[in-house]
Each structure stands twice: as structure tokens, then as C-alpha cells.
Length: 243
Image 1: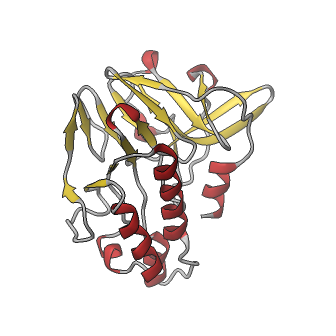
Image 2: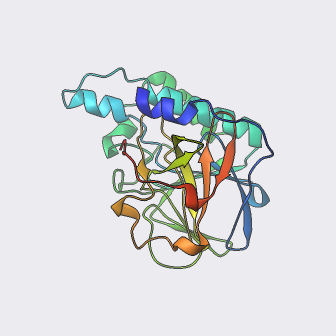
Image 3: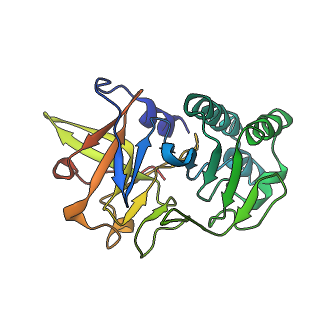
């Protein structure tokens, strides 16, 4: 968790205006937290929260402090307050395992319930958490909204917004390299970074992305500390993954 958190928040040039991504006829603002703000619809999109990931590890014998859920929910609380979102759509893998919905600590369960009382909530199932649950909101396998297809795993089609792959960009410039989680789209498919505090990431030049993205129309927005900034695909280089 430490390396993933450091990669998300490490210093970078914080100057400049907010980035807006124009995708499938809509305008979105990618946030430094990893959420995507769809202001016209009042919707906050988040992918791959992986709540209860470290408690899941602990139950399987890897003892790690189970603080990731609280950190993720506090970030989500801040995003809801800052944007005034009236709806949250979680694009799958919201829990690291199905049983994570039943292992929430009382304080985290209360915080989540409070958040869900402030906005309409849709849980899209992922490969880690395919089963419906009774925490509130609605549980679906996918969702269509204003010409977009909101889903967990990237696939074919137009206007697809997905998660699953935890994208990151590794950029070389001025004699040094920087690696950060990122938002990426090619006009047809957009993939959001993982929102969870205990999640890793995959370089968008890794084999998992081959054939998914059309390089000539690629747009990349990398997360820095306190802002998101555009990156030219020409500056992308291969690099390590932290998945």
C-alpha cells in the first residue's frame, strides 16, 4: 500500500488549470483522487475501490494493517463534498472480495452509510466482487447513460467507460522519468485509474492494454499531487508495474 500511495501523491508541478477530457460528446474533469467528475450529470465515477483488500489478505495469512478502507472512504467523502455530486457510480471491484461487504469495521460501515445517504449510488459488479449485496444503492452488471456504456472491464464499442486495468503512465522528460496513475482514452474507450488506497497500477504500454487503445487518438491525463495534467503519448516509456 505504501508504494501505491506514494506513487499517487508524490510531488510534481502543481501549476495550471484543471484538465477536462472531452469524450464521446461529453466533458469530464479527472480529479487528483482518481475519480472522474461528470458535472453535467452530477455524477462522480470511481473505479476499483478494492475496499477491505488488506483485511482479505489478513484472513489469508498476510498480516497487514487494515486501514485501506478508511483511507479510501475518507477520500471519497472529500470528493463528494468538493464536487457536490448527487450520484456515485462505482465501476466494479468496489470490494476486493464478495465477503468484504460483511467484514467492514463499524466505523467504516457507518462512514459508507453516511456517504450513501448523501447521493444516489450504483454498484457495477467487477471480477473481484460479482455478487449483489445489501449495503444500499443498486447493484447492476453494467449501465447505459447519455450514450455511454459504464462497465468494469474494457471492451469493444463506442463511449465505453471502464476500470479494471488500473492504468498508469511512465513518462520520460528532461533527463528523468516519472510514473503515476492516469486516466486514458482514445475517443472510443476511457479507462479510469484505481481509486483504492491499497491498489497498484499497470503501465499503459504493458501487454494488458495491447489492442484496446487506438494510439493516434490517445489522450492521457496523469495524476500529480493536487492536480491532474495532460501528457503527450510521445513521452510515454515502458516501465515497471505495481498491481
